[in-house]
Amino acid sequence: GRVVAYVSPEGVITPSKQELQYLQAMREALLAGVTGAAALALVLGVLLSRGMSRKLSHLTTAVRAMHGGSLLQRVPVEGRDEVATLASAFNDMSEKLARTHEELHASHQTILAQAEQMRELSVRDALTKLHNRRHFDEHATTLFSHAVRHKRPLSVVIGDIDFFKRINDQFSHATG
Image (tube, rainbow, N blue to C red; front, top):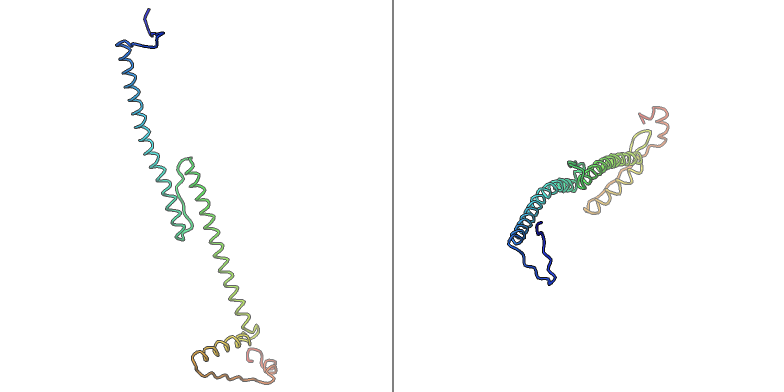
């Protein structure tokens, strides 16, 4: 028994006072809803961006530290989002890179020690541990170059003991 809507075949609607109040209330409710949603979106955006910014700041700081030479870096893994996945992958990469770098450094030190040992073996007699002809040739070349460069005289005295093998055989290599 109540009238809830009017239909006008002419296309002209004349709303009643009650309908105008209803439309005004709807406008105000829509405006309040849109304003509240915008404010809520803004607050949530700020809160989420702060958290995201903090997480990315940890990653940025760790990357800069790696660039400075400190390869082993750990960043906190918070949550289950994409940044947490990235932080976890970064931690794994950092550990692997640091471990590989240490292994490479150890290998490099071994190679240097072996190279020095090989060089030493190449200039010393295995039995007497005295320097050999190769060592003499290297040092003679260096000394000659210095003498020429500084215009200084260079003297070389070489002594030879005939039948030195007899001394070694008779008195031992240590004596020889």
